[in-house]
Image 1 (cartoon, one colour):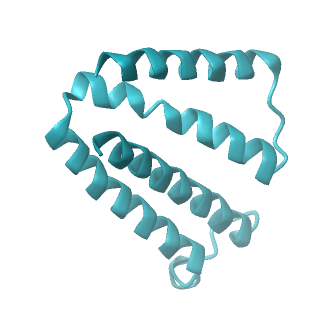
Image 2 (tube, one colour):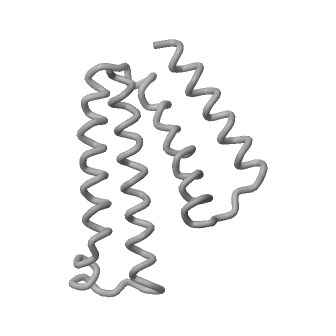
Length: 114
């Protein structure tokens, strides 16, 4: 159950980052001003996802040692790389994919430790 909470916290954090990206894309080249900026739905979605992710993260920290839990958040790098590549068509070079593979290996090794 703890690892499900950890995965959900990671996923919510990544969704919050995605919503932030969509927010700034809607804003265009510059900050639209406070009033208009706060009216962007994606900004509120991002804040809600990040807040929910934080709440789940606190539950995870109640159940796991921080030395084990925190490195597991490296899954965020993997998820954000995949979102950037396939949702936003951002370039990802071979060295970056190698880093993603190493992160997955490290998370797998840590997961077996628990």
